[in-house]
Length: 115
Length: 112
Image (cartoon, chains in turn orange, brown):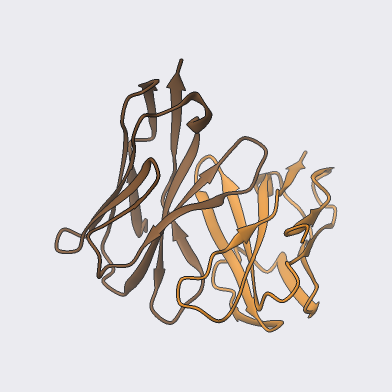
């Protein structure tokens, strides 16, 4: 398996523009997570899904952020409109449902820069 | 509110030395404590994990020590190597949830 695949790897956009980040989880995994990493706040959970259903979106910072998982093999994180403070590395991760200590596998991240 | 506190922020160790990173938590609902390793430009990857019913877990050169009463756990890297230079995150998971809460990270540099 190729692992969790995120695209694009890098994104530079102007303030006010819409940004869409994409994630393909590992085939067969039931959970999908979106995390944001910044120097100031470290790794923060934004939202996670179980079987394509959002379970906890309490980490989504504002209404400008939205996430969808239309099927088991694809998820998007959208920021509209984007702001400079959204600049960060966004990670997607996936894991299996069964097993108490299941490992979360991370993608390589999308580095977002909003200018 | 930082639920998992990690220290130090950065650490420099000589090759062959022992690297020690510490974490503390408050929430007794945490039931799983993994450590993740992250290299520049990569996503975090699971290194080793422990549950609170064990006080120590060892995998190769990496050991987790867990003190349930003190609500603290630590990562020990024995015989540290330059290839261990990375950022290390402790994390914790609450019972009934799948999402991890991460510490702030420790940047480890092992000098040759």
